[in-house]
Amino acid sequence: MKTDAPCDLLVIGGGLAGQASALHAAEAGFSVRLLIKKPFDECSSAWAQGGIAAAVGPDDDPELHVADTLDAGAGLCKVESVQFLTQQAPRAIAWLREQQVAFTEMPDGVAALHLTREGGHSRRRVVHAADATGQVIMDAVTAQVLRHPSITVCTDQIAIDLIRADKVSPGGARRCVGAYALDVKTKKVVTHAARAVLLATGGASKVYLYTTNPDTSTGDGIAMAWRAGCRVANMEFMQFHPTCLYHPHAKSMLISEAVRGEGGLLVLPNGKRFMDAHDSRGELAPRDIVARAIDFEMKRGGYDCVYLDITHKPAKEILEHFPNIARRCQEFGIDITREPIPVVPAAHYTCGGVITDLDANTDLPGLYAVGECTSTGIHGANRLASNSLLECCVFADAAIKRLKLELSNGTPAPPPLPAWDESRVTDADERIVVSHNWNELRHFMWNYVGIVRTNKRLQRALRRIELLKGEIAEYYGNFRVTSDLIELRNLTTVAEMTVRCGMSRHESRGLHFNRDYPKTLPADQAQDSILVPED
Image 1 (cartoon, rainbow, N blue to C red):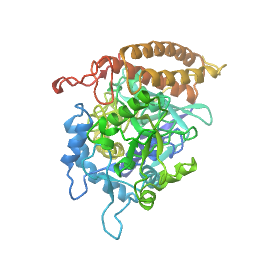
Image 2: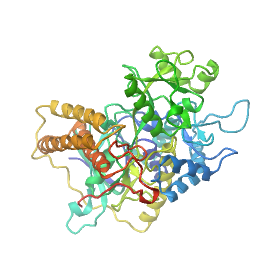
Image 3: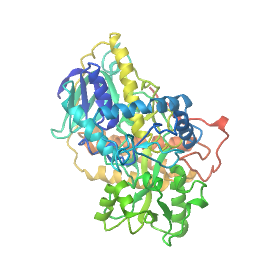
Protein backbone atom coordinates (compact mmCIF):
# COMPACT_ATOMS: atom_id res chain seq x y z
CA MET A 1 0.00 0.00 0.00
CA LYS A 2 0.98 3.63 -0.44
CA THR A 3 3.44 5.25 1.99
CA ASP A 4 3.56 9.04 1.93
CA ALA A 5 6.80 10.93 2.52
CA PRO A 6 7.36 11.89 6.18
CA CYS A 7 6.10 15.25 7.45
CA ASP A 8 6.93 17.16 10.61
CA LEU A 9 3.42 16.99 12.06
CA LEU A 10 0.51 14.73 11.18
CA VAL A 11 -2.78 16.22 12.41
CA ILE A 12 -5.75 13.86 12.53
CA GLY A 13 -9.07 15.72 12.57
CA GLY A 14 -10.41 18.75 10.70
CA GLY A 15 -12.39 20.63 13.34
CA LEU A 16 -11.21 23.78 15.08
CA ALA A 17 -8.68 21.91 17.25
CA GLY A 18 -7.07 20.30 14.22
CA GLN A 19 -7.09 23.34 11.97
CA ALA A 20 -5.83 25.72 14.66
CA SER A 21 -3.01 23.27 15.45
CA ALA A 22 -2.15 22.98 11.76
CA LEU A 23 -2.04 26.76 11.33
CA HIS A 24 0.15 27.32 14.39
CA ALA A 25 2.53 24.57 13.28
CA ALA A 26 2.72 25.87 9.73
CA GLU A 27 3.39 29.40 10.96
CA ALA A 28 6.20 27.94 13.08
CA GLY A 29 7.84 26.61 9.91
CA PHE A 30 6.81 22.95 10.08
CA SER A 31 5.43 20.81 7.29
CA VAL A 32 1.91 19.73 8.23
CA ARG A 33 -0.35 17.00 6.90
CA LEU A 34 -4.01 17.31 7.91
CA LEU A 35 -6.21 14.21 7.66
CA ILE A 36 -9.98 14.70 7.48
CA LYS A 37 -12.51 11.91 6.98
CA LYS A 38 -15.44 14.14 5.99
CA PRO A 39 -15.80 17.66 4.53
CA PHE A 40 -14.70 20.46 6.85
CA ASP A 41 -18.28 21.51 7.66
CA GLU A 42 -19.21 18.01 8.89
CA CYS A 43 -17.60 18.42 12.30
CA SER A 44 -18.86 19.43 15.72
CA SER A 45 -16.96 22.73 15.58
CA ALA A 46 -18.92 23.86 12.54
CA TRP A 47 -22.18 22.88 14.21
CA ALA A 48 -21.54 24.90 17.39
CA GLN A 49 -24.08 27.67 17.77
CA GLY A 50 -23.54 29.50 21.06
CA GLY A 51 -20.01 30.88 21.04
CA ILE A 52 -16.74 31.08 22.95
CA ALA A 53 -16.52 32.00 26.62
CA ALA A 54 -13.95 34.68 27.48
CA ALA A 55 -13.77 37.28 30.25
CA VAL A 56 -13.58 40.32 27.99
CA GLY A 57 -16.54 42.32 29.34
CA PRO A 58 -16.07 45.36 31.63
CA ASP A 59 -17.73 43.61 34.59
CA ASP A 60 -15.91 40.30 34.11
CA ASP A 61 -12.61 38.74 35.15
CA PRO A 62 -10.85 35.43 34.39
CA GLU A 63 -11.21 34.40 38.03
CA LEU A 64 -14.99 34.70 37.74
CA HIS A 65 -14.76 32.51 34.67
CA VAL A 66 -12.69 30.08 36.75
CA ALA A 67 -15.32 30.01 39.50
CA ASP A 68 -18.15 29.27 37.06
CA THR A 69 -16.15 26.50 35.36
CA LEU A 70 -15.29 24.89 38.69
CA ASP A 71 -18.90 25.06 39.81
CA ALA A 72 -20.15 23.39 36.63
CA GLY A 73 -17.40 20.75 36.87
CA ALA A 74 -18.84 19.42 40.14
CA GLY A 75 -15.59 19.06 42.05
CA LEU A 76 -13.47 17.26 39.45
CA CYS A 77 -11.85 20.15 37.57
CA LYS A 78 -8.12 20.77 37.98
CA VAL A 79 -7.79 24.35 39.14
CA GLU A 80 -4.48 24.93 37.35
CA SER A 81 -5.98 23.72 34.05
CA VAL A 82 -9.02 25.95 34.40
CA GLN A 83 -6.89 28.97 35.29
CA PHE A 84 -4.69 28.34 32.26
CA LEU A 85 -7.74 28.16 29.99
CA THR A 86 -9.46 31.27 31.27
CA GLN A 87 -6.31 33.39 31.35
CA GLN A 88 -5.61 32.54 27.71
CA ALA A 89 -9.20 33.13 26.60
CA PRO A 90 -8.91 36.82 25.58
CA ARG A 91 -5.79 35.98 23.58
CA ALA A 92 -7.69 33.17 21.81
CA ILE A 93 -10.43 35.61 20.81
CA ALA A 94 -7.81 38.02 19.48
CA TRP A 95 -6.19 35.22 17.43
CA LEU A 96 -9.53 34.26 15.89
CA ARG A 97 -10.17 37.86 14.91
CA GLU A 98 -6.74 37.88 13.26
CA GLN A 99 -8.00 34.93 11.19
CA GLN A 100 -10.82 37.21 9.97
CA VAL A 101 -13.56 35.69 12.13
CA ALA A 102 -16.44 38.21 12.13
CA PHE A 103 -17.94 38.09 15.61
CA THR A 104 -21.17 39.93 16.37
CA GLU A 105 -20.54 43.44 17.67
CA MET A 106 -22.63 45.80 19.75
CA PRO A 107 -25.23 47.77 17.82
CA ASP A 108 -25.32 51.51 17.17
CA GLY A 109 -21.63 51.81 16.39
CA VAL A 110 -20.38 50.80 19.83
CA ALA A 111 -16.84 49.47 19.34
CA ALA A 112 -17.19 46.30 21.41
CA LEU A 113 -18.09 42.66 20.97
CA HIS A 114 -21.64 41.67 21.76
CA LEU A 115 -21.65 39.21 24.67
CA THR A 116 -24.43 36.78 25.48
CA ARG A 117 -24.97 34.61 28.53
CA GLU A 118 -25.48 30.86 28.83
CA GLY A 119 -26.29 28.38 31.57
CA GLY A 120 -23.78 28.26 34.43
CA HIS A 121 -22.22 31.66 33.63
CA SER A 122 -22.47 34.48 36.16
CA ARG A 123 -21.70 37.12 33.54
CA ARG A 124 -22.35 37.85 29.89
CA ARG A 125 -19.10 36.50 28.47
CA VAL A 126 -19.99 34.44 25.42
CA VAL A 127 -18.45 35.91 22.27
CA HIS A 128 -20.51 34.82 19.28
CA ALA A 129 -21.38 35.27 15.63
CA ALA A 130 -25.19 35.48 15.81
CA ASP A 131 -26.32 31.87 16.40
CA ALA A 132 -23.87 30.22 13.98
CA THR A 133 -20.56 30.87 15.73
CA GLY A 134 -18.96 27.55 14.84
CA GLN A 135 -19.72 27.84 11.15
CA VAL A 136 -18.44 31.43 10.96
CA ILE A 137 -15.22 30.44 12.76
CA MET A 138 -14.68 27.37 10.61
CA ASP A 139 -15.29 29.25 7.35
CA ALA A 140 -12.60 31.79 8.27
CA VAL A 141 -10.06 29.33 9.68
CA THR A 142 -10.53 26.82 6.86
CA ALA A 143 -9.82 29.56 4.32
CA GLN A 144 -6.50 30.23 6.08
CA VAL A 145 -5.65 26.51 6.16
CA LEU A 146 -6.39 25.94 2.48
CA ARG A 147 -4.20 28.82 1.35
CA HIS A 148 -1.19 27.99 3.56
CA PRO A 149 1.64 26.44 1.50
CA SER A 150 2.98 24.33 4.39
CA ILE A 151 -0.31 22.50 5.03
CA THR A 152 -1.31 19.50 2.92
CA VAL A 153 -4.95 18.51 3.38
CA CYS A 154 -5.75 14.83 2.81
CA THR A 155 -9.50 14.55 2.35
CA ASP A 156 -11.65 11.43 2.68
CA GLN A 157 -9.12 9.65 4.87
CA ILE A 158 -10.09 7.99 8.14
CA ALA A 159 -7.30 7.02 10.52
CA ILE A 160 -7.20 3.35 11.51
CA ASP A 161 -4.43 3.15 14.10
CA LEU A 162 -1.35 4.98 15.34
CA ILE A 163 2.12 3.59 14.66
CA ARG A 164 4.72 3.18 17.40
CA ALA A 165 8.41 2.93 16.53
CA ASP A 166 9.02 0.16 19.07
CA LYS A 167 6.27 -1.94 17.52
CA VAL A 168 7.64 -1.79 13.97
CA SER A 169 11.41 -1.72 14.52
CA PRO A 170 13.44 -3.88 16.97
CA GLY A 171 14.98 -1.62 19.57
CA GLY A 172 12.98 1.38 18.45
CA ALA A 173 11.97 4.07 20.89
CA ARG A 174 8.50 4.03 22.44
CA ARG A 175 7.30 6.89 20.28
CA CYS A 176 4.43 7.69 17.93
CA VAL A 177 5.79 7.99 14.39
CA GLY A 178 2.70 8.02 12.21
CA ALA A 179 -0.63 6.42 11.45
CA TYR A 180 -2.40 4.13 9.03
CA ALA A 181 -5.44 5.65 7.29
CA LEU A 182 -8.04 4.33 4.89
CA ASP A 183 -8.52 6.39 1.75
CA VAL A 184 -12.28 6.09 1.43
CA LYS A 185 -12.34 6.86 -2.31
CA THR A 186 -9.60 4.47 -3.42
CA LYS A 187 -10.34 1.93 -0.63
CA LYS A 188 -6.56 1.66 -0.08
CA VAL A 189 -4.71 2.06 3.20
CA VAL A 190 -2.10 4.83 3.31
CA THR A 191 0.89 4.86 5.67
CA HIS A 192 1.55 8.35 7.04
CA ALA A 193 4.97 8.86 8.66
CA ALA A 194 5.63 11.91 10.84
CA ARG A 195 8.04 13.28 13.44
CA ALA A 196 5.01 13.93 15.66
CA VAL A 197 1.27 13.23 15.56
CA LEU A 198 -1.57 15.34 16.96
CA LEU A 199 -5.04 13.91 17.60
CA ALA A 200 -7.93 16.35 17.15
CA THR A 201 -10.66 13.85 16.37
CA GLY A 202 -13.45 15.18 18.58
CA GLY A 203 -15.78 13.25 20.83
CA ALA A 204 -17.82 10.07 20.80
CA SER A 205 -21.48 11.12 20.98
CA LYS A 206 -22.45 8.80 18.11
CA VAL A 207 -22.18 5.96 20.61
CA TYR A 208 -25.70 7.07 21.58
CA LEU A 209 -28.92 6.76 19.62
CA TYR A 210 -29.74 10.48 19.86
CA THR A 211 -27.05 13.12 19.55
CA THR A 212 -26.63 16.74 18.52
CA ASN A 213 -23.33 15.88 16.82
CA PRO A 214 -22.50 14.98 13.21
CA ASP A 215 -21.77 11.42 12.13
CA THR A 216 -18.03 12.04 12.51
CA SER A 217 -18.19 11.93 16.35
CA THR A 218 -17.17 8.28 16.69
CA GLY A 219 -14.38 8.46 19.28
CA ASP A 220 -11.62 7.61 16.80
CA GLY A 221 -8.79 9.43 18.56
CA ILE A 222 -9.71 8.18 22.02
CA ALA A 223 -9.81 4.57 20.84
CA MET A 224 -6.60 4.85 18.82
CA ALA A 225 -4.70 6.46 21.69
CA TRP A 226 -5.93 3.72 24.05
CA ARG A 227 -4.75 0.99 21.69
CA ALA A 228 -1.40 2.81 21.42
CA GLY A 229 -0.90 2.73 25.19
CA CYS A 230 -2.35 6.00 26.53
CA ARG A 231 -4.43 6.35 29.66
CA VAL A 232 -8.03 7.52 29.35
CA ALA A 233 -10.10 9.22 32.08
CA ASN A 234 -13.66 10.17 33.04
CA MET A 235 -15.48 8.60 30.12
CA GLU A 236 -18.66 8.26 32.19
CA PHE A 237 -19.21 12.00 31.89
CA MET A 238 -21.10 12.31 28.62
CA GLN A 239 -22.85 15.66 28.47
CA PHE A 240 -26.41 15.55 27.23
CA HIS A 241 -27.47 18.87 25.80
CA PRO A 242 -30.88 19.71 27.25
CA THR A 243 -32.42 21.09 24.09
CA CYS A 244 -32.30 19.23 20.80
CA LEU A 245 -35.21 19.92 18.42
CA TYR A 246 -37.83 17.18 18.67
CA HIS A 247 -39.04 16.52 15.15
CA PRO A 248 -38.96 13.33 13.04
CA HIS A 249 -37.05 15.04 10.24
CA ALA A 250 -34.73 17.33 12.26
CA LYS A 251 -31.68 15.12 12.55
CA SER A 252 -29.30 16.34 15.29
CA MET A 253 -30.57 19.93 15.31
CA LEU A 254 -29.35 21.71 18.43
CA ILE A 255 -31.30 24.59 19.96
CA SER A 256 -28.58 26.81 21.40
CA GLU A 257 -28.10 27.37 25.11
CA ALA A 258 -28.20 31.05 24.27
CA VAL A 259 -31.95 30.84 23.70
CA ARG A 260 -32.32 30.20 27.44
CA GLY A 261 -29.61 32.79 28.11
CA GLU A 262 -31.74 35.40 26.35
CA GLY A 263 -34.87 34.54 28.35
CA GLY A 264 -36.25 31.31 26.87
CA LEU A 265 -38.36 29.29 29.33
CA LEU A 266 -38.74 25.52 29.59
CA VAL A 267 -42.37 24.46 29.90
CA LEU A 268 -44.48 21.30 29.96
CA PRO A 269 -47.05 20.62 27.21
CA ASN A 270 -49.63 22.48 29.34
CA GLY A 271 -47.39 25.58 29.37
CA LYS A 272 -46.29 25.26 33.00
CA ARG A 273 -42.67 26.07 33.88
CA PHE A 274 -40.79 23.41 35.84
CA MET A 275 -37.09 24.33 36.18
CA ASP A 276 -37.50 26.35 39.37
CA ALA A 277 -38.65 23.16 41.12
CA HIS A 278 -35.32 21.52 40.23
CA ASP A 279 -32.78 24.34 40.74
CA SER A 280 -32.88 27.91 42.00
CA ARG A 281 -31.09 29.06 38.84
CA GLY A 282 -33.99 27.84 36.72
CA GLU A 283 -33.27 27.68 33.00
CA LEU A 284 -29.73 28.97 33.58
CA ALA A 285 -28.64 26.00 35.70
CA PRO A 286 -25.72 23.93 34.31
CA ARG A 287 -26.52 21.51 31.51
CA ASP A 288 -26.43 18.32 33.58
CA ILE A 289 -29.10 19.66 35.94
CA VAL A 290 -31.33 20.92 33.13
CA ALA A 291 -31.01 17.68 31.14
CA ARG A 292 -31.91 15.53 34.16
CA ALA A 293 -34.83 17.82 34.98
CA ILE A 294 -36.22 17.46 31.45
CA ASP A 295 -35.65 13.68 31.55
CA PHE A 296 -37.48 13.50 34.91
CA GLU A 297 -40.46 15.55 33.73
CA MET A 298 -40.78 13.59 30.48
CA LYS A 299 -40.80 10.27 32.32
CA ARG A 300 -43.11 11.49 35.07
CA GLY A 301 -45.66 12.89 32.66
CA GLY A 302 -45.17 10.36 29.86
CA TYR A 303 -44.33 13.17 27.44
CA ASP A 304 -42.44 12.76 24.19
CA CYS A 305 -40.81 16.17 24.72
CA VAL A 306 -40.97 19.45 26.61
CA TYR A 307 -41.01 22.95 25.10
CA LEU A 308 -38.65 25.91 24.99
CA ASP A 309 -40.69 29.12 24.83
CA ILE A 310 -39.23 32.51 23.91
CA THR A 311 -42.42 33.95 22.39
CA HIS A 312 -42.69 36.53 25.19
CA LYS A 313 -39.75 38.37 23.62
CA PRO A 314 -40.26 40.81 20.71
CA ALA A 315 -40.18 39.00 17.37
CA LYS A 316 -37.60 41.43 15.98
CA GLU A 317 -35.25 40.69 18.89
CA ILE A 318 -35.68 36.91 18.49
CA LEU A 319 -34.92 37.01 14.78
CA GLU A 320 -31.89 39.26 15.29
CA HIS A 321 -30.37 36.97 17.92
CA PHE A 322 -31.34 33.62 16.41
CA PRO A 323 -31.76 33.97 12.64
CA ASN A 324 -30.48 30.49 11.78
CA ILE A 325 -32.45 28.68 14.48
CA ALA A 326 -35.57 30.56 13.38
CA ARG A 327 -34.95 29.67 9.73
CA ARG A 328 -34.29 25.99 10.45
CA CYS A 329 -37.33 25.69 12.72
CA GLN A 330 -39.47 27.40 10.08
CA GLU A 331 -38.41 24.65 7.65
CA PHE A 332 -40.16 22.22 10.00
CA GLY A 333 -43.25 24.40 10.34
CA ILE A 334 -42.32 25.99 13.69
CA ASP A 335 -42.44 29.78 14.05
CA ILE A 336 -40.35 30.41 17.17
CA THR A 337 -41.66 33.97 17.49
CA ARG A 338 -45.22 32.65 17.95
CA GLU A 339 -44.98 29.09 19.30
CA PRO A 340 -42.72 27.15 21.68
CA ILE A 341 -40.03 24.81 20.34
CA PRO A 342 -40.39 21.06 21.11
CA VAL A 343 -37.11 19.84 22.63
CA VAL A 344 -35.51 16.72 24.15
CA PRO A 345 -32.03 16.05 25.61
CA ALA A 346 -29.43 14.41 23.35
CA ALA A 347 -25.80 13.30 23.72
CA HIS A 348 -23.67 16.34 23.04
CA TYR A 349 -20.14 16.41 24.45
CA THR A 350 -17.57 13.89 25.70
CA CYS A 351 -16.06 15.39 28.87
CA GLY A 352 -13.54 12.56 29.32
CA GLY A 353 -10.86 11.33 26.97
CA VAL A 354 -7.13 10.89 26.50
CA ILE A 355 -5.20 12.22 29.48
CA THR A 356 -2.97 15.18 28.57
CA ASP A 357 -1.00 17.86 30.38
CA LEU A 358 -1.15 21.61 29.74
CA ASP A 359 1.19 21.19 26.75
CA ALA A 360 -1.18 18.64 25.15
CA ASN A 361 1.29 15.80 25.76
CA THR A 362 -0.18 12.31 26.07
CA ASP A 363 1.45 9.29 27.73
CA LEU A 364 3.05 8.35 24.39
CA PRO A 365 6.04 10.49 23.35
CA GLY A 366 5.48 12.15 20.00
CA LEU A 367 1.70 12.05 20.39
CA TYR A 368 -0.27 15.19 21.24
CA ALA A 369 -4.03 15.55 21.66
CA VAL A 370 -6.23 18.64 21.58
CA GLY A 371 -9.94 19.31 21.98
CA GLU A 372 -12.86 17.06 22.79
CA CYS A 373 -10.88 13.83 22.55
CA THR A 374 -8.86 14.82 25.63
CA SER A 375 -9.14 14.89 29.41
CA THR A 376 -7.24 18.00 30.51
CA GLY A 377 -8.93 18.58 33.86
CA ILE A 378 -10.88 21.56 32.52
CA HIS A 379 -14.36 20.09 32.28
CA GLY A 380 -14.37 17.80 35.29
CA ALA A 381 -17.75 16.10 35.69
CA ASN A 382 -19.58 18.58 33.44
CA ARG A 383 -18.42 21.10 30.83
CA LEU A 384 -19.42 24.74 31.24
CA ALA A 385 -21.18 26.02 28.13
CA SER A 386 -18.93 27.60 25.45
CA ASN A 387 -15.65 26.39 26.96
CA SER A 388 -15.22 23.83 24.16
CA LEU A 389 -14.23 25.99 21.19
CA LEU A 390 -12.08 27.96 23.61
CA GLU A 391 -10.26 24.79 24.66
CA CYS A 392 -9.53 23.99 21.01
CA CYS A 393 -7.83 27.35 20.44
CA VAL A 394 -5.91 27.53 23.72
CA PHE A 395 -4.51 24.00 23.62
CA ALA A 396 -3.71 24.07 19.90
CA ASP A 397 -1.44 27.02 20.65
CA ALA A 398 0.08 25.27 23.69
CA ALA A 399 0.68 22.04 21.77
CA ILE A 400 2.62 23.72 18.98
CA LYS A 401 4.71 25.75 21.41
CA ARG A 402 5.72 22.45 23.00
CA LEU A 403 6.25 20.87 19.58
CA LYS A 404 8.67 23.66 18.64
CA LEU A 405 10.79 22.86 21.69
CA GLU A 406 10.69 19.14 21.01
CA LEU A 407 11.57 19.26 17.32
CA SER A 408 14.24 21.91 17.83
CA ASN A 409 16.03 19.45 20.12
CA GLY A 410 16.68 17.17 17.20
CA THR A 411 13.79 14.73 17.08
CA PRO A 412 14.79 12.42 14.23
CA ALA A 413 12.76 11.56 11.19
CA PRO A 414 10.61 8.45 11.66
CA PRO A 415 12.10 5.10 10.64
CA PRO A 416 10.88 3.31 7.51
CA LEU A 417 7.35 2.14 8.28
CA PRO A 418 5.80 -1.11 7.07
CA ALA A 419 2.88 -0.95 4.70
CA TRP A 420 -0.54 -2.13 5.80
CA ASP A 421 -0.80 -5.92 5.45
CA GLU A 422 -3.90 -7.14 3.61
CA SER A 423 -2.45 -10.49 2.54
CA ARG A 424 -4.78 -12.55 4.73
CA VAL A 425 -8.09 -10.74 4.39
CA THR A 426 -10.88 -10.64 1.81
CA ASP A 427 -13.77 -8.35 0.97
CA ALA A 428 -16.65 -8.62 3.41
CA ASP A 429 -19.36 -11.05 2.43
CA GLU A 430 -22.16 -9.51 4.54
CA ARG A 431 -22.09 -5.78 5.38
CA ILE A 432 -25.29 -6.26 7.41
CA VAL A 433 -23.19 -7.49 10.35
CA VAL A 434 -21.63 -4.05 10.75
CA SER A 435 -24.87 -2.08 10.44
CA HIS A 436 -26.72 -4.43 12.81
CA ASN A 437 -24.02 -4.18 15.48
CA TRP A 438 -23.87 -0.39 15.06
CA ASN A 439 -27.61 -0.07 15.67
CA GLU A 440 -27.59 -2.47 18.61
CA LEU A 441 -24.72 -0.60 20.29
CA ARG A 442 -26.37 2.81 20.04
CA HIS A 443 -29.72 1.53 21.27
CA PHE A 444 -28.47 -0.21 24.41
CA MET A 445 -26.09 2.64 25.24
CA TRP A 446 -29.04 5.03 25.12
CA ASN A 447 -31.26 2.73 27.22
CA TYR A 448 -28.69 1.55 29.79
CA VAL A 449 -25.94 4.20 29.92
CA GLY A 450 -27.96 7.37 29.36
CA ILE A 451 -28.86 10.35 31.53
CA VAL A 452 -29.92 8.17 34.49
CA ARG A 453 -28.10 4.89 35.19
CA THR A 454 -28.22 1.93 37.59
CA ASN A 455 -25.76 -0.85 38.40
CA LYS A 456 -27.96 -3.39 36.64
CA ARG A 457 -28.20 -1.26 33.50
CA LEU A 458 -24.42 -0.82 33.36
CA GLN A 459 -23.87 -4.56 33.81
CA ARG A 460 -26.33 -5.36 31.03
CA ALA A 461 -24.55 -2.92 28.73
CA LEU A 462 -21.15 -4.44 29.51
CA ARG A 463 -22.36 -7.97 28.70
CA ARG A 464 -23.60 -6.82 25.31
CA ILE A 465 -20.37 -4.93 24.63
CA GLU A 466 -18.33 -8.07 25.31
CA LEU A 467 -20.39 -9.98 22.75
CA LEU A 468 -20.03 -7.20 20.18
CA LYS A 469 -16.27 -6.99 20.74
CA GLY A 470 -15.89 -10.65 19.85
CA GLU A 471 -17.93 -10.34 16.68
CA ILE A 472 -16.13 -7.17 15.60
CA ALA A 473 -12.67 -8.63 16.30
CA GLU A 474 -13.48 -11.65 14.14
CA TYR A 475 -14.83 -9.45 11.36
CA TYR A 476 -11.84 -7.07 11.58
CA GLY A 477 -9.40 -9.96 11.38
CA ASN A 478 -10.92 -11.57 8.30
CA PHE A 479 -12.13 -8.77 6.06
CA ARG A 480 -10.74 -5.59 4.53
CA VAL A 481 -11.39 -2.48 6.58
CA THR A 482 -14.15 -0.05 5.67
CA SER A 483 -14.96 3.30 7.23
CA ASP A 484 -18.06 1.82 8.90
CA LEU A 485 -16.03 -1.02 10.41
CA ILE A 486 -13.32 1.35 11.66
CA GLU A 487 -15.89 3.58 13.35
CA LEU A 488 -17.83 0.67 14.83
CA ARG A 489 -14.61 -0.77 16.28
CA ASN A 490 -13.79 2.61 17.84
CA LEU A 491 -17.30 3.20 19.19
CA THR A 492 -17.34 -0.22 20.82
CA THR A 493 -14.03 0.56 22.53
CA VAL A 494 -15.39 3.91 23.72
CA ALA A 495 -18.62 2.30 24.91
CA GLU A 496 -16.67 -0.16 27.05
CA MET A 497 -14.61 2.68 28.55
CA THR A 498 -17.77 4.63 29.34
CA VAL A 499 -19.37 1.67 31.10
CA ARG A 500 -16.24 0.67 33.02
CA CYS A 501 -15.68 4.23 34.24
CA GLY A 502 -19.33 4.41 35.26
CA MET A 503 -19.13 1.11 37.15
CA SER A 504 -16.06 2.30 39.04
CA ARG A 505 -17.79 5.47 40.31
CA HIS A 506 -19.80 4.69 43.43
CA GLU A 507 -21.51 8.06 43.61
CA SER A 508 -23.52 10.47 41.48
CA ARG A 509 -21.53 13.49 40.30
CA GLY A 510 -22.08 15.96 37.49
CA LEU A 511 -23.17 14.18 34.34
CA HIS A 512 -23.05 10.71 35.92
CA PHE A 513 -26.21 9.94 37.88
CA ASN A 514 -26.62 6.42 39.28
CA ARG A 515 -29.80 5.62 41.20
CA ASP A 516 -27.91 3.02 43.25
CA TYR A 517 -25.45 5.71 44.39
CA PRO A 518 -27.53 8.91 44.39
CA LYS A 519 -25.29 10.90 46.73
CA THR A 520 -22.10 12.79 45.90
CA LEU A 521 -18.99 11.91 47.89
CA PRO A 522 -17.32 14.65 49.97
CA ALA A 523 -15.00 17.00 48.08
CA ASP A 524 -11.86 15.44 49.56
CA GLN A 525 -12.88 12.06 48.11
CA ALA A 526 -13.51 13.30 44.56
CA GLN A 527 -11.35 11.31 42.14
CA ASP A 528 -10.98 10.86 38.39
CA SER A 529 -11.95 7.54 36.83
CA ILE A 530 -8.67 6.53 35.15
CA LEU A 531 -8.31 3.54 32.82
CA VAL A 532 -4.79 2.18 32.25
CA PRO A 533 -4.04 0.07 29.15
CA GLU A 534 -2.00 -3.10 29.45
CA ASP A 535 0.81 -1.59 27.38
